[in-house]
Amino acid sequence: MNRSVLDVRRLLCPLPVIRTQDRVRDLAPGERLEIRCTDPGVRHDIPAWCRMYGHRVIGIRETAGEIAITIEVVSDEGHR
Image (cartoon, rainbow, N blue to C red; front, side):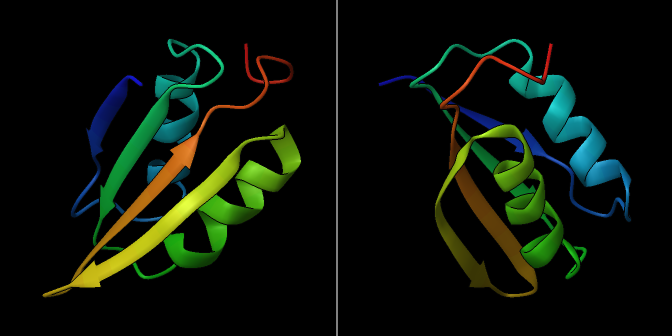
């Protein structure tokens, strides 16, 4: 399984979601993306975005002020 990493640390809302959406456009269904963030709002924003576009949140991990959200691209509809 292919997994990419997107570093959006030090970016504030809405940029982490916009950059996630941009990266997902280049991924195929079944691929995973780990989004590394520091904006605490992403804990809600990225899962909400995933629900809207049919992707799946695999996990959310927090360490030392950094949030890592792993998502799986499920659908290629609605984000191209």
